[in-house]
Image (cartoon, rainbow, N blue to C red; front, side, top):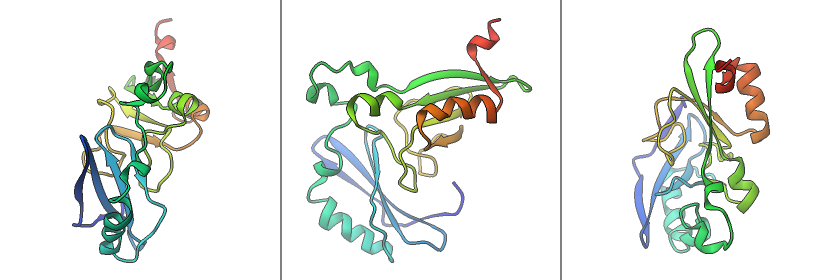
Length: 187
């Protein structure tokens, strides 16, 4: 993501065994935002905007730092302990492979539709605070979880970070990007 300025006030916070990375950033000429990413890749962009980066850090220390479990009440790694009878495999990203018709380049689509449908959780938010519904990667998908596009440690091969309804992603990939899934290439 271009036009993003990061504050030097980043920090790492722990909740028991859980590590939370605290990012403070802003779009150029915009207010500062607070973005929290846990060790499983779940993330949260706080709704509150800040005039100064130090105000964002103070907000984290005063509010979020005192009650972090409110911000990360559960995540896919521990969901099977909290929801008896849930098939944990439903919480994994759903992958599908595509090729570009002209260049024959490989793409991997990763969607999070099932996470939301079955347990109401969402694994990540974009830098603007929108729910990330999936990724289109050039080549193979990196190991999940990973930080959202634009944050340190995000994979270089993210082609598109989706925030649209998951049911619209396939339409976009096939019609707007003109990619064909693996079954097309077997014929």
